[in-house]
Image (cartoon, rainbow, N blue to C red; front, side, top):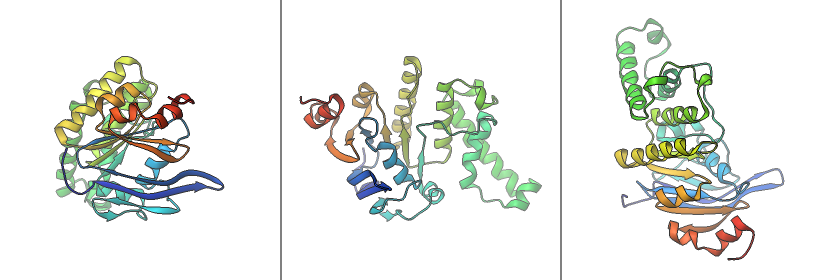
Length: 258
C-alpha cells in the first residue's frame, strides 16, 4: 500500500430522496493502493454511496475529493476520464453485443479520432483502433475470456457476464476501481475465480479498490480496511479484525448485542 494523500476522500456526504435519508454525514478516505470494503445490511446505503462517488447521484451536502480535486459537481463521464471506474450491482452490459464489443465500447473515453476520421477508418483512426484493440485483448487474456470473446453477452451465464463487466471497467484504465457486489449470485467456483482476479488486479496494477460485498469471509480475507454502514450512517471503520469484533457491526447484522 502506498503512503501519501488519500486517493479518495468522502467528506460529510448526505443524500436524500424526498423525505428518505439514504446517507447521513458520511466521512472516510481511501488510501492509494488499498482494498477498502464497504459493508452493511441491505438498505444501509452502500450502493447510494458508490453512485454518489461515480456521479450517478448528487449529494445535497458534502464533497467528494479525488486525487486532491473536488469532483462533487462533475458528471459521470468526466469522473471516468479522471480514472474512476465501476461495476454495477445489477449487470449493465450491452446484451446484444459480443464480449469484445462491450470492452471496446469502454475505450470510447480514450479515443481521439472524430466522426469523419472514424468513418473513413484511415491513418490515425486506424492506428488508434489497433491500439485500443490490443489493450482490450490483453484484458480478455488476463480475465481468461478467450473462449467467449466473440460470444453475444446475452447468451453468457451470469458469472461470465459479471466477468465481462469487470473487464469493461478495466478497459476504462481506472486508477480507482469500485466493485458493487461483484460476486452476488455466483456459485462457489465463480466466487473463487472473481476473488482471484480482484487480487491479481490489485497486486499487478497496484490498483486502489473499493469493494461492496456481502460475503464476510471474502471481505475479511482480502480487505485492508473496512467501513461499515447502517441506515445510511457510518457506524464503524477499521481493520477487518477490528470490524469483526465491533459490537455496533454485530448488532447491525444480527439485530442483537454482542
